[in-house]
Image 1 (cartoon, each protein chain N blue to C red):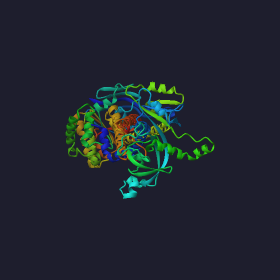
Image 2 (cartoon, chains in turn green, purple; image 1 turned 90 degrees about the vertical axis):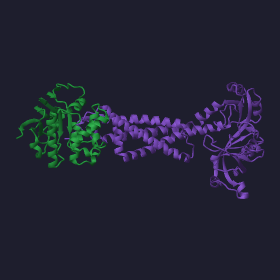
Image 3 (cartoon, chains in turn purple, brown; image 1 turned 180 degrees about the horizontal axis):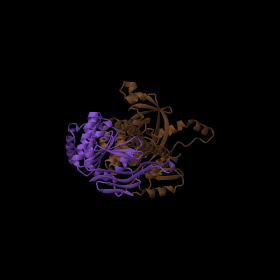
Amino acid sequence: MSLVELQGIAKGFGTGEARVQALSNIHLHVAAGEVVGLRGPSGSGKSTLLNVVACILEPDAGVMRLAGETVWEGRWRRGDLRALRREKIGFIFQAHNLLPFLNAIDNVALAITLSGVALGEARRRAEALLDHLQVGRRASAMPAMLSGGEAQRVAIARALANHPSIILADEPTAALDSERARVVMELLRRVARDQSAAVLVVTHDEKIFDRFDRMVNLRDGRIESETAST
Amino acid sequence: MNLALRDIRHKLGRFLLTCAGLGLLLGVALAMVGIYRGVVDEALSLTRALGADLWVVEGGTRGPFAEASRVPGDTREAVARMAGVVAAGSVTFQTVEARAAGSAAASSAGATRNEAGRERIGAALRLQIIGHELDRPGGPPALVEGQGIGRGRREMVLDRSAGLPLGAIVEIGGVRFRVVGLTLRAVSSGGDPLGWITLLDAQELQFRLNAPAARRAAAGGGGGQPQDTVNAVIARLAPHADANLITDDLRRWKHLAALTATEQENVLTRSVVERARKQLGLFTGILLLVSGVIVALIVYMLTMDKLREIATLKLIGAPDSTIVALVMQQALLLGATSFASGAVLLMAVKDVFPRRVVLGPQELLGVGFVVFVICLLASLLGVRAALRIEPAQALGG
């Protein structure tokens, strides 16, 4: 089952001669349990595509379905896009983007409370998640006190907090060494498998290219090629 | 989970430093309000100290605090005979430059003098002198030290704010008065300490201070001004007497005018200190406006400082209410902490001010409410900035 379905998605910026076509006729499917990489040179449209799937940017044309729900078809089909993100999408950032004024456990618990869960229960679930990602002993540490790998694992815990069916990651290993990058990718693969989630990762990091089920190559806003992992 | 508090706790030093700076500004604004209230309070302290229900002044004038008023000395007897009047007394008012000329007790027996007295010896003092008839309305209010003026002349009851001790000698126009009693917080509308002397001394003093004019009038054959004139006659009324009825009766005497205690207070607050009130009110308004602009800028900076965090919150699905609460709660906490520090600072130093600073619960609550509204409005700039932050800013690239 495809959790991310893009059919003929297009997105441009500006008007007239200054118009830039960032995405053209994008067809992309990411199935449950699949980990797909998205790569390409600067300006190829990777971030734009991620923003469209994250429902941050509105496409100009095409159809977008997320977890079986038609989200965009000529217009947004959902009123509250933030609720959609909260329910269906988990985000992992290059710079982990943990809130610096909350400790590790509360960074994860905050995401859970946003879904209406009481703080006590949210903390209990966050603790279990951190333990699962082998960073439980650092639960009370502030983000500034965490190593790059620890911070990224806490960020992954936050992304998984509400059991999303789609996980979007923007250069999640860019700031990590090879060993930690490998651990993070293994984690994402495990999550995809265990939770039947679709994982879409924007990356430039050659050392993890072999960790994807499929690699989508973008150039000038178009899908140039797709490479299945050997 | 209160994000505003957690963020403040994370950067507590910076927050407290910001509050200290803003607290100083709000402290100044609060001081202005206190001085404003103090000016009104001081303006009324004289009339309240005299405890008059009725003021009889020169016809066509609004009394000695607004303009020159002279009435014949025997007016008091006529007023005292009116129905409803319990007691009446003649009073004179003079603002004089006096000199503290040492202490009678000290010169004889080396008696101790308090610190204020020692500092003031030989210093020029600006006083408002009230001449009054003993045992009639117009005398000093309750004394905090010493005794009232006896039958003897050249004695004075002085307010403590003059800084002189009991037994001090005050020289006015060459006449030396001995301080026999002290009052508390009895000052003129200009903030000068009040001093009470006998009516006869006051009339003599008026003559002495106007000696050249009196000599010129005598040389011109006019014989000078009659010395038995007073500035006003004040009266106390029976509990059930109608002050308005009695003032109407008095106004029929063409050479006299009459004011009730309320009318006299209005003259003082709406006329005599009106400019000072407006000045202070305007300055207070400007300070509060400046505070509002500064709070708005601080909240805006605090918000923009959290641009990435707010974008991340939006991206992970935090509703606008969470983000608005974060900004507004921080603005209100900033205002509350700054106001509290400003108020504490002012309460600690208010007695050092040369003029009285009156800060009661009413003033504190009033300014506190204004600061609350200012913070609320100022936070709107931060809220607007926060709501305009795109979630995409969390992703970068």
